[in-house]
Length: 160
Image (cartoon, rainbow, N blue to C red; front, side):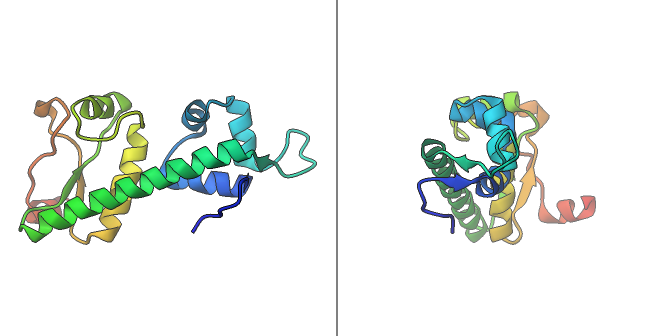
C-alpha cells in the first residue's frame, strides 16, 4: 500500500517509477517537469546534496494516479487471462518490442494509448505472476504487430 500523504519521498517516487517499468525521461515528459527535476526526485536529494528532496504534492498526485491506472490495467489483464483459461484457451498476453509497435496496437484499440511499450511489458509480466500458466508473447510479424502467435503450452515448454 502506498502512502496517502500529499507529498512523497524520493525513494517512493523511484520505487513507483520502477514498478511501472518507466524510465526517468519518459516520466518527466508525462509529468510535465524537467528531466533534471525528475532525476532529483528519483535520487531523493536536492542539488546541493544537503537535504533530501520532497516530491511536490502536485507531482505526487500524478504519480499515484499513474500507479492506480496501472494497477487497474494489470487487474484487467489478469481477468482476461483467467477467462481465457476457464474457457480452455491459452492465456497469452501480447507484448511489444518497440514504442512504435505498441502505438500501432493502441491505435487499433488493443492496449491503452499514451504509454510506452516497456510499461505494457511490466504490466503484462505482473499479470502472469497472478495467473499461473499464462504466457507473454511477441506479436506475429505477419500481423502488423497486433496479434500474438498462437502457440500451444507444450510448444512453449520446448522453447524454454
